[in-house]
Image 1 (spheres, rainbow, N blue to C red):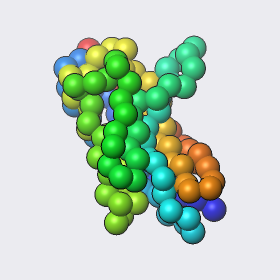
Image 2 (image 1 turned 60 degrees about the vertical axis):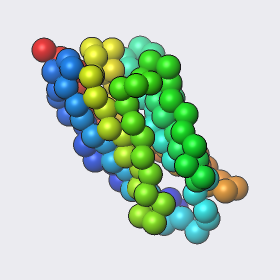
Image 3 (image 1 turned 180 degrees about the vertical axis):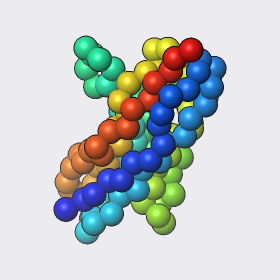
Length: 116
């Protein structure tokens, strides 16, 4: 059973920064992709950023230039550095892992609130 442990999140003012991290454990299979999704109240869960095992990244247009995803394959960790945060970035952020032949798996979610 794959376990995802998230850290980071919290309350930040507009224009501020936060860093999220997620570590995967318990997998017997290779991790194909790691990334982050978010879900705001009343909205569907949406992609924020993903990183494939080869290092290529994919970002939502709304976060390009402000968010940076990084991955440590040796530690099975994915991080999301969020800068220039906006009110509309407020959401629960979920770590997502896709294994070679299994998944996706989801973290428990961490709240990010952008408020003045």
